[in-house]
Image 1 (tube, one colour):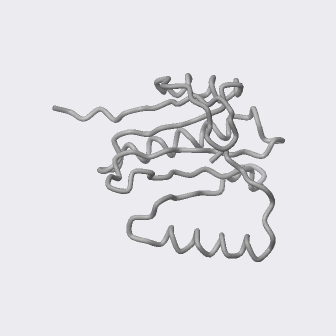
Image 2 (tube, one colour):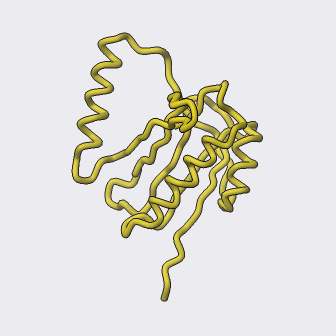
Image 3 (cartoon, one colour):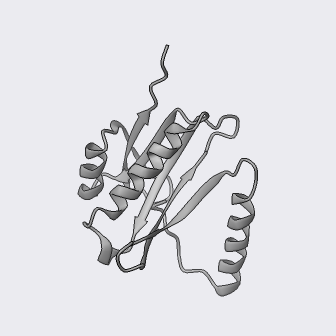
Length: 143
């Protein structure tokens, strides 16, 4: 979710939007996304989504969140991430949720610690070269 590319032309954005709507209407979409709205002002302040990147399994999802800069450090992204992770782990299919952030993003590191996510590997992003930190949480399945 954090990997934002260059600005799109109107035609490209329209095609991407239509493709996104089509994908999310499938029985088993590859990803879902939601607009984050501040309840007090009704302002649209960001987006959050989940992506299933293992084609053969719906058990592992990645969650990402983007919040407009003027809404940073207000807890909105953290609250949205908490709600989506809990929702995914309460489903029958999802057992593991991954979250990624830049190693330099101290706010994300603090938020992921606060969520109780387990720190995973550090790796170089293949397109940006940024150092990335992996986090995850696994649903506890009773025996």
